Amino acid sequence: MHRAHEHESGQTHHHHHEAKPFTPDYSRQVRLREVGDAGQAKLAAARVLVIGAGGLGCPAISYLVGSGIGTLGIVDGDRLEASNLHRQTLYDARDVGELKAELAARRVAALNPTVSVQTWTEPLHAGNAVEIFRQFDLVLECTDDMRSRYLSSDAAVLSGTPLILASVYQYEGQLQVVSSKPGAPCLRCLWPDEPAPEAVGSCVQSGVLGPVPGVFGTMQALEALKILLDLPRPHEPALLLLNLLDYSATRLPIEAERGCALHGGCEAVARRAMARMQAESDIDVTFGRLEEAFAAGYRLVDLREASEMAVEPLELPALHVPSAEVMAHVAEWADGRTLLICASGRRSSHAARLLRAEGLRQVHSLAGGLNALRVTG
Image (cartoon, rainbow, N blue to C red; front, side):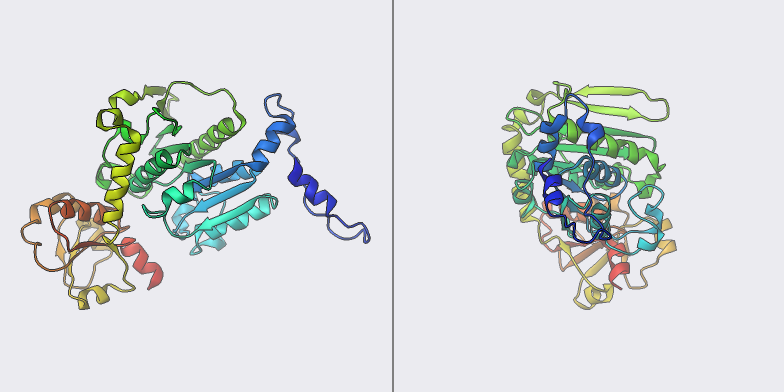
């Protein structure tokens, strides 16, 4: 409660017409026996990081800020698109084109000005994730990017920071808490290797009803508050699967001894994965315009489907190879620099890593894909 008192002591009473500083009222949650003043003080001292300020992140941020979290970190490099608005409820039509992290920070200040906010407008990477995680008590991973989720799991394990993961696919979703305690399972215990982007649906590819990520983002905020307030939670590590059409729920137990324990334990596995990611840090390259890459002598390879290319043709000489077929071209691309291109950079980045593993050191991916060129162009 000390944060509110700071504001009260700073009030001036000389001019009765002056606007009083906002003092949050947490009375409804403080009334809960399990929260009380002591619990509210815990929240005021808490530092929580939210990675992704989209469909999952918006409700998570709203509820964490409303509860009186002391410090909130927000990581998001994306700009708001009109297609986001049906599910990303922190924003409105006037915000299209703006950076989500900055928009979210402004909304936080409007919702609860006592919350301290830090923003990152670049995605976390293997070089900084562990260090940033160590600055927080808890992390919520709210992107629909598998690479970010695996990086977050590894960083959570190596920093000892609890992590709450959620993802949605059309009308269903899943929730997993990585406690990061010694011997407890991580994301890799369940799925050791990051799947290809084509194998995992995203909102762009599969479609989504707005309330679906809203439900799971709200559940992430609830799990965060339960951990911070030490409220009762399931003891056994599990993946919760919830179908919002028929409300069927399944708890899939995660047994650490059948996961990373077979490969030296979560920490050893995470350390190896981080080292691999750092070694691949030169894969994603940025260009202001695709013509720059062409002029620099890159072989351009378009990994998009024919339907995507029809909507937005490249208009530069490029090979067309669907992302699922890149491994058939290893011998052809052994010489010279190759730049793989897709819409968001996810398929191209994954394909580039597969080709690097085959010894093609000069294969690169267009960072952020064609979407990034649209923003800078």
